[in-house]
Image 1 (cartoon, rainbow, N blue to C red):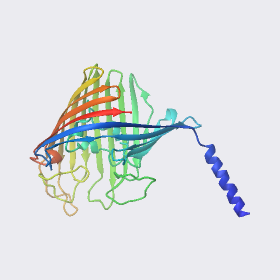
Image 2 (image 1 turned 90 degrees about the horizontal axis):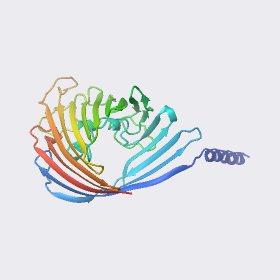
Image 3 (image 1 turned 120 degrees about the vertical axis):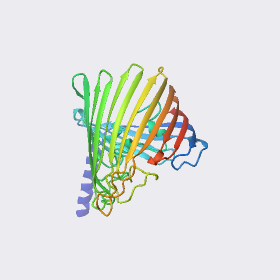
Length: 362
């Protein structure tokens, strides 16, 4: 009798699941690319001054559908050229209440405030070291919940609010969920607002705070913030952005002449950048961008105190000239980017990278 009861309950549960299913549209898209790159200079850890030709392919799977209550759901997975996971996401759009999303390597809310774009890429995509601006929110965009409000009208402008919470700030894929308190960081909370005016002016402000665990070597919580302004007038667009990343104090002494990474180094990073982009015609665009990112070691902590060795500030500079030409599904893009004092090393020399890429989307 119990066996029949179990069979009946199983059948009922299966029918309930099947009854709640909805039709979804599934699609596959991709891109094929060929890239030629050269590199020269004496900065950072640069030892290869040669040139190379390679591929840059990608493949994406997506699905979307509508629920019985009018909400919609979309999901996507992107693979790299090596057929490894690049990113995945699930988004629930709740009509006039906005949307909620989660996933891996999605950019989270910070992706809406992450650097100024150019004709090809952001200024540091061709650099030897990413700007500290790109580190903002990078450990909070995995396995978190991110809310985007609907656009609200306000006197000729639209206002969009972003809110986010990540239980554990970790730059790794927590597929299926993962409960762990290991590492330096605990939870992360962030918020941002974007204002777009009909005149062509756009403003954005974003902040992210990460709590440190009791086992952390940092003496205080992490704070990351940025703001930007862009203005489009006809074929020309200009933009300016500032960012601030405070990684707290470090127990290890900081030396001016060694490489530093935003994720591991204590101290603070302050960056500002600007870009000018011109659409020559419907197919061709060119841009120029410059960035300065200054590392301040503050007072390195020693034996749990806030005293210790202080080193001189180190500023990493980047300039990038870019061009892009598109013709249907084919594009040709190029950049020349120069980085001075890469990896925030004092008297660190410079490195120049040149790239030209052929892209085909399908």
